[in-house]
Image (cartoon, rainbow, N blue to C red; front, side, top):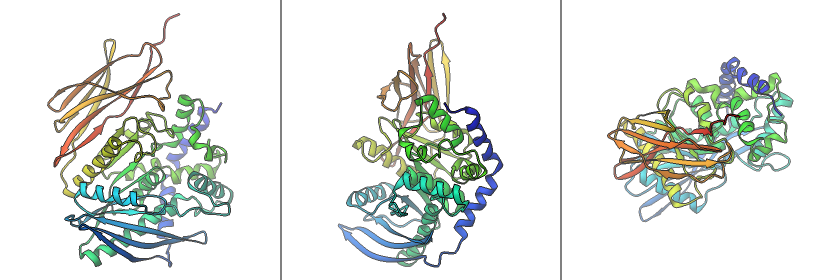
Length: 437
């Protein structure tokens, strides 16, 4: 069994090294990239909807030239804006991406860009992908102390260079400057989103998705407590000896460089965090370990009965995701404030009460509730429960579980120019009261 003390040392180390982490990331981003280049490869149009395809060389990393496709989706009638939404993803463009990108651009009412091939992969001698690739680069850093190795740094530089290319493209083809970006991505690309926001002031807002692991030093013992072991999805890191992180100067330094929580003071920009309620990577209430540490305006959207892949489960899940991101981006473009939410969980007799105060009255609201025999809710089914609505205040109650555990959160519906989107509260998990002997 892993001791809490060992994790506490890792968490404490974050307070010792944040300035060094900033310096390392910024130093990597400042490193000249003579191979950086971009070109407009193709422009296609159908029924007035236009797709621009750019080719970008972002950098040379460890002797490997990183190449990316960068597509801009501009539906008919969607005029360019000084703020551009940028979705960071892996792999190469597919027809499904064009459908999602164009639909999102329609909902936003402005063009959006998708950056592909982040990271470039497969890479290295064994042709590694995704978590296995990231884990290998972490191991190589620990062995060599070469701070160019952690893969998140070149992933961030890919986004930075894509923003350079998009600004040049917009100035030339649109004759319209792009000055700010709303950056988003899922999983490792959400991880990249956080780190890009910490290092580049052009990032005006972020929408990181399913990367519910900030404050890693606290997250890992939380997994042991809830699951009895690390999530099986994290095996690429476990089998390489990265969980728990080695308690060496290099191990602590690695954590400080790649955990977005180390950069939390830099996240004053608006933040729209999207999580699936059944994500097998993270504990269900992982957000609670870092939410209070995030400065500035912030919102969360939980997509119920959805796992790590937010784009797959069903049309309702996709709608929640796209509508939420679109509404958030619209508000960043217009300067119109999003509804401000405050919530409180408290006992109410034999029940548990959630009270939410919203600066704007929601059009509807509900509780989402799940039950499980233990604190692992990854396979639980979430069900709706009614709430009372009075103007901008909603109140929902659930009965404390007689056995096992119960989890619940609030969800509020809002209207933005005829489009319904949701905002959520944090998740609260409670166990059945202990019975007297």
